[in-house]
Length: 119
Image 1: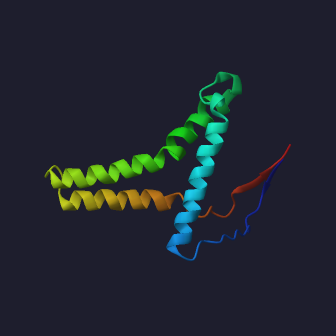
Image 2: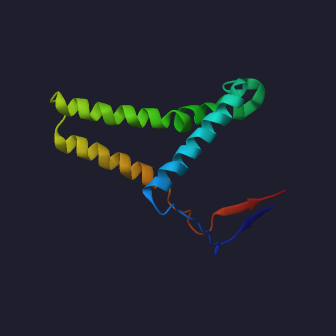
């Protein structure tokens, strides 16, 4: 049976300073990496079904490695700007698109989303 709540309300707390925000993100990143390291035999292992084949590799690629990829992308943008391979406008456009893609993940869910599913 599926339940629909059209007037559901969700509250969240955000860090009040940039230092607390950075600390929170650091803690989340370390927790993700710790969970992946503890459960590394599951990564790509068909014995664990969809979780092993798709779920765990997803977390390795898009969660654990994302900080490294973002840092490398920022360094690459600066290098291409210095070498004259990109214009300031192109670099600013890439930064804007990266920012928009990042905040897109933090939006609240629309009203009417499935909140609980039980059989």
